[in-house]
Length: 424
Ligand code: CXA
Ligand code: CA
Ligand code: ZN
Image (cartoon, rainbow, N blue to C red):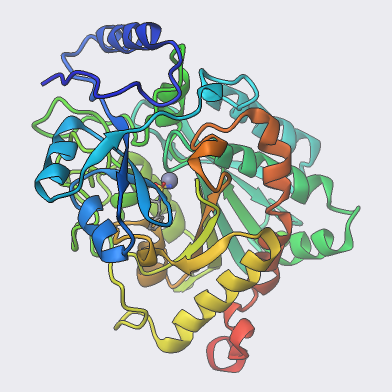
């Protein structure tokens, strides 16, 4: 089942070393799993969401949408299927500057140390909660930030999730930046102090630690997206966590049923152990029948977008999304985008996806929520692997946008002047 590497893998300047590292990785697990060889490809002459959805339905991941072209990651089989649909995909080489793991990015063991430090420095404001274990048995941690942090007070709660996709390492740096901003800023900045006093903020700084570690563990980045869980009846590894959520799972051609695909939706909704753990955590925030979390952001990279539900349909209004609810998402998304310069849109404007966290958080839990696709805007600036020198600038860039969400967390519908109807 091993396919030849279709092209120079992304960001791998040292190709022979990369191939060796992958092989060693396979042998070291002691199993006969075939590491898939995904490649990066460009497809020209594509400009509509319908075309992009048709392309995504083959099982490739759409990494970037250009004016008239796309970048996708996929297997040789995916590329053959695209060819039979009339889409010619050409191997694409990223600029050479983006090689090899950059020690400026935080590993999972380092992240756990940082979390312990933040909690030790601010014991009244920050607390760690282990909400589960990853497939490989690593602790999944949440950090709660609020005044009287050890008490479950009746305050609006806000959720930040990071790194569903392994190779999107800048999102972990975003989590660290938010922890620092909200704890170090407390007592220094009036707005931050008020928000930390008045909200309970949950940061889940890396919901896919196995994938992150795998992506960083070689001599070069491995361009990994999924978790590291095998699937039934296949030697392939990994579920795309952002296709595994339990609302309209697998409904609409927005994910793949092939375990080899980079957008594999998993054997069942919530079959990904990390998705099940985060979903249980979120359900656990229902107190006296009421979901305490009012609003959320799920951080990804890249393209500089703010996306809102739904992803499974092009429709704005459905049985599960009224006009006012849609308008609330759009207005808050646009208000945040004014602050960070990202492009705001419904996620299906990009391409149809099913089983995303956005659709589940809204339809199942009633949480007003967004995906941020962080820096960079284009592949030429580094794609999934920008140099760590951008971390400070690109995480600070989102401070005001995130504070705007926290401002409205008492009643997101306030942004369309409907607080009496929805929060009265
Ligand atoms: C996305 C995010 C949320 C809902 C629909 C679509 C985009 C995201 C994805 O495909 O999951 N893009 S990304 N981060 O490159 O994988
Ligand atoms: Ca509190
Ligand atoms: Zn992503």
